[in-house]
Image 1 (tube, rainbow, N blue to C red):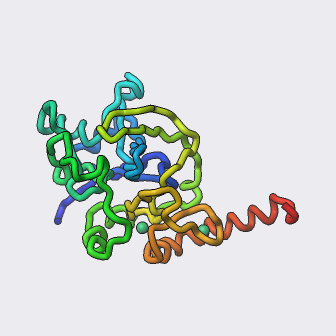
Image 2 (cartoon, protein in one colour; image 1 turned 120 degrees about the horizontal axis):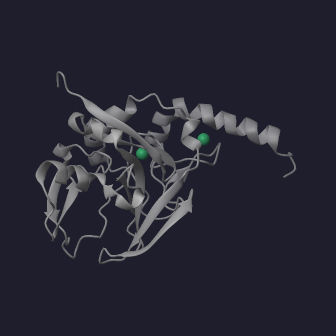
Length: 238
Ligand SMILES: [Zn+2]
Ligand SMILES: [Zn+2]
């Protein structure tokens, strides 16, 4: 691991939290010419949602954009042939190091759902997840809990069961599915309001007690502020 370097790019807010993308060192220079943002693909048939990294050429605008995992693959390995797609080996879609990308047949076997999501809080996955580079990297970021609550437009895509796009829309803070609020955790709700909400601030959601406890030292700052805000800004009888 000596001399090992990673790029971490701060993205916008999606599914209730600010997201970060992981890149190989050699791809960090992409940030000079490309804007990075999140894109939430929601499965209309109820198999959850996934957050992807979307980049576009600053000169040419958003319509020129690509999914980062596809862009990185084509940059280093050439064109993705029809019938194939790029997947994330460890299911962490924010981890776009070449080592984590793999080419797989486009049509998943009919027995698997359109969007594969790891079951939230699976004990068998937990130790793997916590040893992932993404988890370790994001855990070490010094996050500002206040900046995490800015509302930014979120791009949603809806897919039918054949993987075709049904509708595109931009929603203002249109979180439908929430991701666990603990920054390194990428567990995503598979149905609306699956995760429990913080009882104090009623703002953030966690996949389980473990993540809520881990996030508390940072989240308690915001949690308190929110309560003070409510007390001072709102009449008590409302
Ligand atoms: Zn709270
Ligand atoms: Zn979690």
